Amino acid sequence: EPEVTQTPSHQVTQMGQEVILRCVPISNHLYFYWYRQILGQKVEFLVSFYNNEISEKSEIFDDQFSVERPDGSNFTLKIRSTKLEDSAMYFCASTIRGDAYNSPLHFGNGTRLTVT
Amino acid sequence: AQSVAQPEDQVNVAEGNPLTVKCTYSVSGNPYLFWYVQYPNRGLQFLLKYITGDNLVKGSYGFEAEFNKSQTSFHLKKPSALVSDSALYFCAVRDHSGAGSYQLTFGKGTKLSVIP
Image (cartoon, rainbow over all chains, first blue to last red; front, top):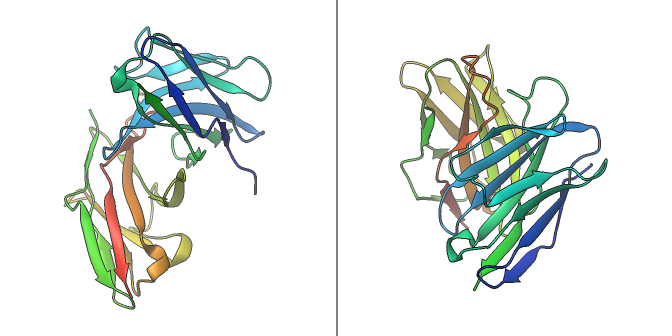
């Protein structure tokens, strides 16, 4: 069964540095998402992406964050000037083409970001 | 705004006994409701969804959930728990009101422990 893959599985960075989290969504999916989960807390929506542009973003997704689909397979989340509170598990997800409202999300295994 | 409440941080159940994980929601329109399961160091996996129609929804691994509009609830159930069901369970909602939101709002999760 096709899967969403994320790399790296764990990223350690120093405060103020830039990180790029990478995701390869399922190949025939058209809607892409980033969510994050701070340790022990709920999963929070960051951004959705469709047709090479952001379709929706949350209050968390400020100017520090950006997303990109640089080629036909990768979907990246860039965090500029990381802060301690950015430490979390970041999940990429995708949904199949069609009605993205009721299609279940397919999640990757996540990237654990630790900012020191 | 949409929200989800999972009132129990943890549910303990003996193997072979029925289990229930509670979820209530709040949306302005009609809800799309989902349950996801998260095993350690893994991404969220889709279990089941309610879109419309029969209030009792059956999903993966013998799980089912009942949509109750009057109580705005979507409790997850299984007739006979297995030790392998031990995991973190997330309820999620998306508003079907036509606001155009792709955002899936998650509850904070309920840790299910099935005791042998």
